[in-house]
Length: 229
Image: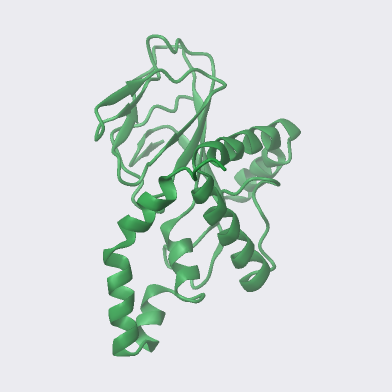
């Protein structure tokens, strides 16, 4: 299946906002794919893997983990109690299941939180010493990506891809993320950008634009590890 990021099957799951939605909601799938995803998401091994990725984010980026955790609590408990968490004990709002022969082309996930960290878990029978490497083009970094391992990367600002697989090899991955639209919805007081700006005073609009202009500073602060006590 040809798509923007490569030629492989990809199924979304979880909660997001954008793409014409009027409020946060779950990503749509066909009835067949939805049943398959529900079975996969309910598997105890899948739940453990999601908590593994969650704990990696907590260990290396605790401030960002706290932001994701609070964002999900606010959106679900205060604004959309009918929405269901993707994984118990995992702060990520959504994920993509990239299946069969997932090897991505050079791309940036510009719909994700710009200063966020995408958590990617890799699996499948492939020679990770020769293929399936993760390339972060913007940073000039190439790393081995063995099956059964997870990587955290800033997927929105950094262009990245995987080296191709050999004939007969298979590789799947699960990419955990938080959409930028979801974060904006919460920051706007449970409104889209358009609705907020339509309602805002000139003073509020200026404050809103000033905040957006300095958002990178917030991102840099969230990447810092708090000092040891």
